[in-house]
Image 1 (cartoon, helix red, strand yellow):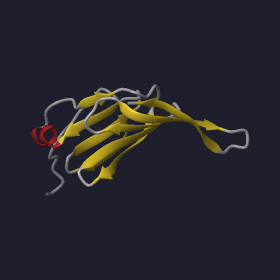
Image 2 (cartoon, helix red, strand yellow):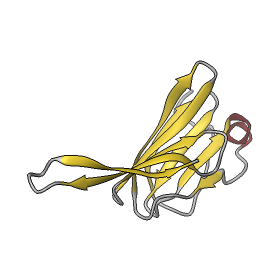
Image 3 (cartoon, one colour):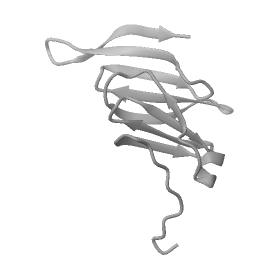
Image 4 (tube, helix red, strand yellow):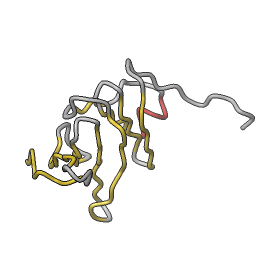
Length: 116
């Protein structure tokens, strides 16, 4: 590899965060969208990925998290104050939390905002 481009994946948004593992890649965008591409889509440079909806504002971080040895989830954070945990097999959040800034500038959890 001498600096050649191996693959190009395009979305109609500004990518703010990215994470990858052997099963696929996830990205978070300025619009609040989270995308997931499986390994086949990445190898063939095809598809726009699965767009996951749940945030209203810019996604600041996406991460793969291991639930069990055979099961993975996706965690995303956003400037809308939400932390969403997505079942990697689904297109909607399986759990979410709403964050608030307290008067003393500490961050606190209001509570669960969505469950499956």
